[in-house]
Image (cartoon, rainbow, N blue to C red; front, side, top):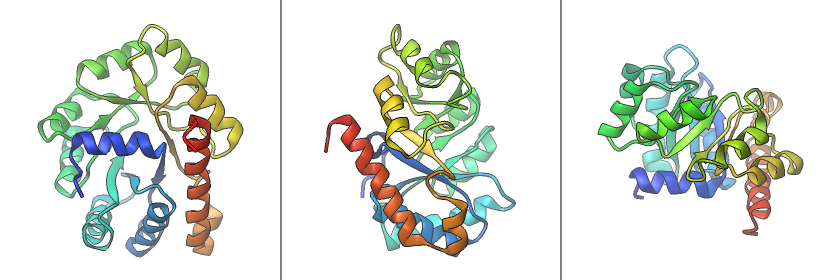
Amino acid sequence: MVKDRMAVLTALMDQGVIPVFYHPDVEVCKNVIQACADGGAPCIEFTNRGDFASHVFYEVTRHFDEADPRVIMGVGSIVDAPTAGIYIANGAKFVVGPILNADVAKVCNRRKIPYSPGCGSASEISYAEELGCEIVKVFPGSSVGGPDFVKAVLGPMPWTRIMPTGGVDPDEASVKKWFGAGIVAAGMGSKLITPEMLDAKDYAGISKKVRETVDLIKKVRGKA
């Protein structure tokens, strides 16, 4: 499967919901990510949160290269260029961060890896686009103004592609508000992959929840 920059960007936007997930156990990660892929969301944002997270990422990414090539592994919570480089070397096909860092953008651009930095103002979004970012992350989504912020930005900057994380829930009311405002995708974490599902190892339940959310976004977009 082709996983170049353009293919990954298209996959992210088509998928609509990007599961945001981290767990220190490699086997749990494999099961959760497979469940997401089977539910229609093979693009995964694995967050760089725990000790030796990059080692877990490496093992999981190598597994899916053979077990299910549909899976596109991206990394989140990246705030500096050296860490971005480690994950790209370990197979990351897209990079997401809570902040905008020009050095991360340069590293990603050299390898043609999509970079979605966290932005909280029109000026940050514009600078991210100047650095070559096709999709910007609004973070934290609910705190910077929610759907109203998205609408306000897209007025004078209609070319902007926004992917919020934080504040977008997997229910019809939330999805309608955000996608109605003009976002191209949304990152969802514990509301999508709940702690209760993880504790129960309810991978079938995770797959079902992801499928429902993917289908809901298609419906709201008028694609269903």
